[in-house]
Every structure is written in structure tokens, then in C-alpha cells.
Image (cartoon, rainbow, N blue to C red; front, side, top):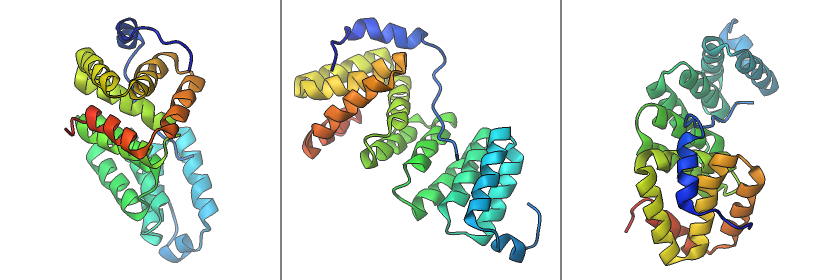
Length: 222
């Protein structure tokens, strides 16, 4: 990876780089139950995408609810509801929808990322960090969740906490400190995906025990 700027120069830049905003993963109502059930999944998806692109959150919620009525075990129906509810500021309901999504599809990192956003926006940042952590442990290449984890870690710990965590990581394993510095600070400032991908490549080269040590330090697990 390229040479790193000192962390005491990067942290102030993170403070002034703009509002701390978690990145939401996008998803990319009439008729009786029989008619709804006959719709192919592609139609449900296309309409959900169209409603999301228009920013019609009440319409998207109604669509997701109708979808959920006929396909209660389809995680996409719950994702759509969570997406709409989050945008409407109904965070408790969004959390419930995303949790149902994750119960059905535990490996759905998009849902775990957006679950983290809902926790964070409802004032529960530690639970948000656990959701983001779960997402990146399932898919280390999911840079958006790394970004959100880093921002929320900064929100909870502050500049002093980030510095302390980096010092502890450096003392334990310099490779861990380098990865975390890149993902939590440099990528949040630069938004240069190449920087994050380089760090993820290093992360993938670490052993499971090394990754566990990193998260143990960051999450104060002893």
C-alpha cells in the first residue's frame, strides 16, 4: 500500500470533511391476493426499483407490504419495507423489517448494512457497529459497510478513541493498524475505492486469528 500520512493529520480532516453520513444500500398495490401472488418476482423488483428511484417512500412501503403478504419468506420483501421505513424516519419498524430479512437470509450483507444504518439513526451506534461488523465478516470486500463501520466507530469513540485503537493495533500487529487506518480514516476522507480495496486485499491475507484480534481490540473484547 502507498505511504501513509500521520494519523494526527488525518483525524482533523475527518472532522471537517463534511457531515457524517452512513451509506445506505439501495434496493436496486392494488389487486386482490390472488392477483398479487401471480406476479413474478421480476415485476416486484422492477416496481420497487421504480418507486425507490422516484423517492416514493410511502408507495415503496405499501408495495413491500403487499409483497410480504404473498411471499412472507422472501427476504427482498422485507428489505423493501426496511428501505422505505428508514427513509421515512420510522427506525424501529425499519430495524424490525431488516432483522426479519436477516433471519430469513443470514448472509444478506446489504440488509445487515442497512440494519446498521437504522440502529445508528435511532441513536444506537454500538448496535450499528455490530451490524456493520457482521456484514464485513461475511463479505470483507463490502467496502460500503467498512465505511459505515469506520464512521460510526469515530462517532462512538471520538478522535482520542480512534487514536488509542490505532496505537493498540500497532502494538499488537502493525498490519492490523495499517488496515484499520486505511479503512476508517483514509477512505472516509478520500472516498478513493482503490485505497479501500488495497486494504481489503491485505485484510484477506491475514489469518482468522489476526482478524479476530483486530475486532477484539476495536470492540473492547479483552
